[in-house]
Length: 277
Length: 316
Image 1: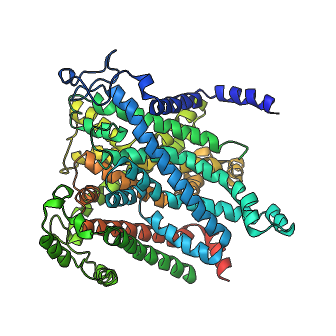
Image 2: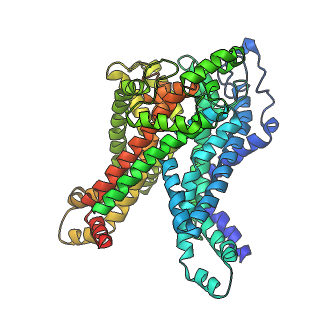
Image 3: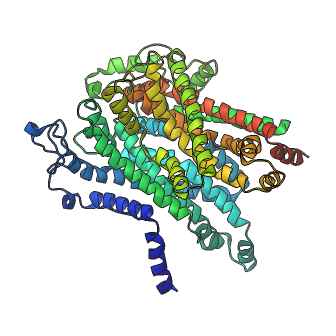
């Protein structure tokens, strides 16, 4: 069976060039984050002040900034800051949101009511605003941005998980498991959790793109690591003052960011359309 | 119906109260020394303890937390969120002063976003060319993926600096509104367009369309007469997402274009840790969200007879 499906999956993938391109973009971004030295020989921190504001060229693919630092190198190293924060944010939102949704959906009435009213409140505050408030309390840093973005999307994970759990709990096989004498916790672990996770995982895939955007937006507003650190949102913000004369400083890092988010969205929709779901 | 309305109203009021409490806990209780937030972090160590105590007493931080909470809650109910730390002006005044700017921007952006979304949905469902359909259908997800600050800067670069058609900054005159409006409309249009494309496709495949076609109605008649209304109603269900996009988008748009508004006020309030102002803004936003959602919840059954029937059944 697996022998047959593997080539078919490859063939399906090759029939969708956009999806292949999306995977390439995401893989490249992950490569940048994991092994930045492999992709550029320039340092992201030190530049040649005499070569400031060089336009894109064979030497400096994305040009250089005010301090003569290679912008491509800063983008490559920035991937680590931005993607680590994104990953942390999604893990926080997924982990906490799933547990909350599970408790609300499985333990029923009182728990459900109490938890969902709190979730309502978190949903009533737009996530960027909530993240800004949280980051102002925690202090400015890349990790706190990640935490803030994660916290601000817990509510949507909790809501999806809850509705999935409610749907699964009503299924016959769950009743059958009870009938066969399984305990509440055993049913929870064996049947409810595995069967409700798929939608939440699809949401997590979608959330990756959203979280990259949120992390970069907060970085752009200046709530991330302090300036010498490369971060995608901050790179765009740094170039903003020179956009009239040296537009590439903002636009190239911003475009790299946009491409990664578009690719992440494309991949997440392909996961959702998966018939096995 | 009355029970439904009462339940929804109760929930909306609860959300506003809880947003107040949440921000109170986050901003006034969790920080070990809330008065520290009132000073510039760089100068914090140079401030003598007497001054700190004086400031703490001024803001009521020396009283027990519960007393502070009820005092602030009581005053907030009367619309008083205290004074902004930075400007000394009452929070309500500061917010209301810039609110019209943001309302104008958001309303315009929402209208433009709706136009874009209908354009996408109608093109996608009426074209006979698959490549055009695919292209148009991929636009909404691109619209939500491009960071607002990037699209803002791109528009700025092309239309303000290269072509000089519109002013780059400021908030005077209708010309200065054009670029921010487009910037904000793009991400807002994405989810609406996605939903409309789905609904238009579903409606066009439904039985009543086939019947009308069989009876001789043209496709245009069906689309304008029936499909348009039936497909549009569900757009109300994503009001929450739209509202969130508008708020988040206006924070960034107003920053990029240096426009006066609630978004920019929020950003400065957070930057300067202007605690009362931050709380006032968050509660205002949560209240508007709750109110808009309540309005949608109450109006939706009036617009959709099917839902009215379900509600009537439940009430029995």
